[in-house]
Image (cartoon, rainbow, N blue to C red; front, top):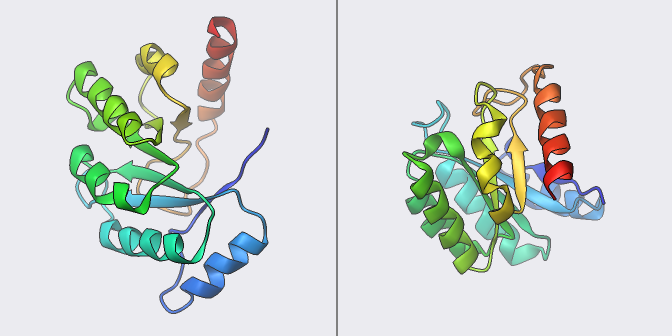
Length: 171
């Protein structure tokens, strides 16, 4: 099954209602909330995305897909749990060690939310293989996180194929 998660990163102030309801009418499956802290990535969208996610929760029944591009994953999980996201995806590279990765997976699941792990273009996909049985989705970044409008890094297509092949073989 194919599902569409539409990023709201570029929604203009003053056009939120029109845009969000338009996306709902267009039958998007999820609202993709790109949360950036200005530390893990250069751009800071943290407060704007928290505001938009809260607003969407009030006007729509569509699920929220929260993508955390932040250093302090624990704090961001706490801040975004009240908007009841369907899925929270965090970056593997923001974790200090594998134990911390598992702590975040558990915390997100304990709060009745699906879990995703995201990897940057330079990260070897094999690094996350051990976590695949515990997560719902893997986001392979095909651009450097934190900036919209970038050109696709075509060698990421091979990384996606490699992950898909591994998953089929294992599961």
